[in-house]
Length: 418
Ligand code: ADP
Ligand code: MG
Ligand code: ZN
Image 1 (spheres, rainbow, N blue to C red):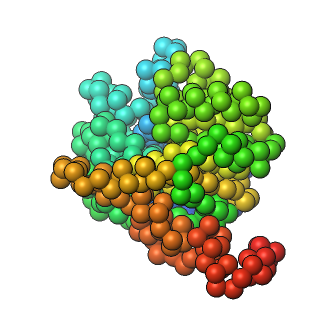
Image 2: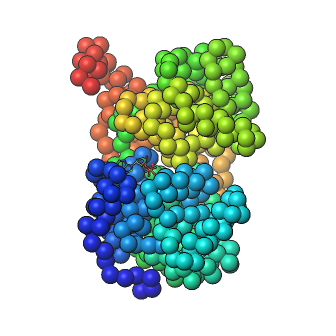
Image 3: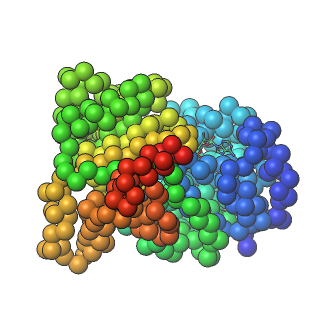
């Protein structure tokens, strides 16, 4: 098999974890996966947001499995990771169109003199013949595909260039491959496996439970005062309000601000400067609220987001999971509150959907059933992601059931114990 050499000892990784990354210990699931990489296996890792998926390819890179080529969908994600790696003394660089020409030249020099350990490449860039020739000469030891759900048409962030990564990798030696994602319902998972991997990968599935996030879904559309109420309940804290369209985003952000509840808009229709200013403000402040479309959030690493409020629901449970998952990354309690108009969920169930859009229809049906349903919210979400679970005991439906079964005392007791 090309581009593979002897397995590397786990000791190198254990010591680099402390020495280079300055982490005391692995997080759950990380060690086994790093071990599999060092042993030369192809890996497909499904782990929730915040689990620490970047370490799964960064640690091997500094432990001797280098160079690693990392494909990542967003320039901002690459930039953050490279800055953090360089701060730790790791030779990392990116090739993408958003770079200053000087940056690309410096990266190319690191490649030429074989110093580079991690090379980040945007998927569009990967597809270019020049890049492929360069990678064929560079002979990467590992190909890491981050946010791998972008490979699948069924995923909510589909990127056509991602779907071709597997085929392109053949042209530069089909190196050992790791794909990581926080979302992969069974159908998406199968798609990623067949498109990305030349051999069957070892699958690592970490539980998608996020017990610190409590879910509530209101079976009616939102009003301005509903959303303001959620924000006020979290005075002094940060949160994200998701809207279904750019217009709704602008309108709601403006209305909130006019009513004394400051909130910044974020969507793809804003100019780049405003977008990055609003994102920076959100990331740097402890009490910032952003009103956004789905354009906001992928890869946002802000630990103290205390609430995610859906003024409109997204079109699938996977997207919903991804969005609420941006809350509570520090492990402290966080709240996911959604408002769903009757109109929205009857609209989803419309019967005149043609068979070409079957999957979309299934997804829409599932999320509308989730919104209308009386089963545990978390159990419903996790079931869609392929995971069985017991009722969470903390969502609106679980609390309602407890109230029916045992009266208000049961809820009080539970709250006190928690
Ligand atoms: P994911 O991609 O799974 O959402 P990231 O790779 O962005 O997660 O990691 C989330 C945060 O956790 C980062 O700030 C990272 O530095 C940190 N982290 C990762 N692994 C560890 C660890 N073993 N110990 C402490 N912090 C960690
Ligand atoms: Mg990540
Ligand atoms: Zn529940």
